Amino acid sequence: MDLADFPRLKKLDLGYTQVTGDIRDTGEDDFPALEILCLPSTVQGGIGYKFQHVSEVPSTMQAIYLLMQRTPTLFDQYWLPVAFRWSLSEDSPDWYGYDETSGCPRPPFFLQIIRAGSRHGWSWYSDDYHSCEINWLDPEPSSESGDYETYIEEFQRHRIELNIDIYEGYSQPPTSVEYNGLCLEYLSL
Image (tube, rainbow, N blue to C red; front, side):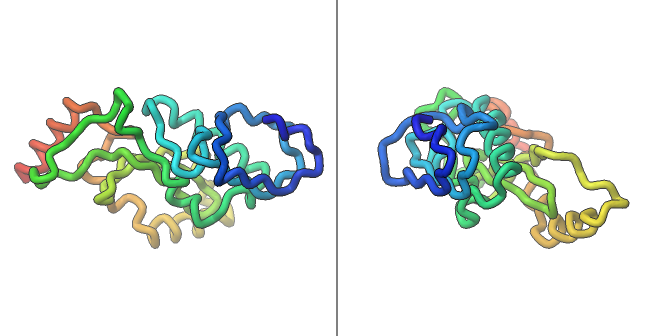
């Protein structure tokens, strides 16, 4: 944030530094000319950041979304769909272990950003590609709008809802108790 007052700063790449901070602290008027931003894993919202609490994620996603609305080119398009490789930290009180030999899908401790037409959202997913419900950041386009067909086509082409199976109804990772119950149901199918 020490650089936020530089009115002509267009690119800020702190990717290989030990800078700390929180992207949620970025205000609407900060970095007015910024076109490209790259933050390290030591910044909440940086590439490879590991969240300490599931509850921190919605406000971080909202901050990222607002920055993307202001400057669509701000984040590297390679990192964006995989939500900058964000995950829940194994040190988090929300993290729990699982039995890899059980045959049950792994817990959804990774994040992804979803785009369908002009619509943006995010969801938790497991590294074996089972997803939680999508947390949309903006409303579905009206069926009368020109973007509606694009939204539907991209939604279907990417088969976005295909992987929402075991975690259907969950917008965030289930608790350990809920997960164990879901596994019992999944394995009995």
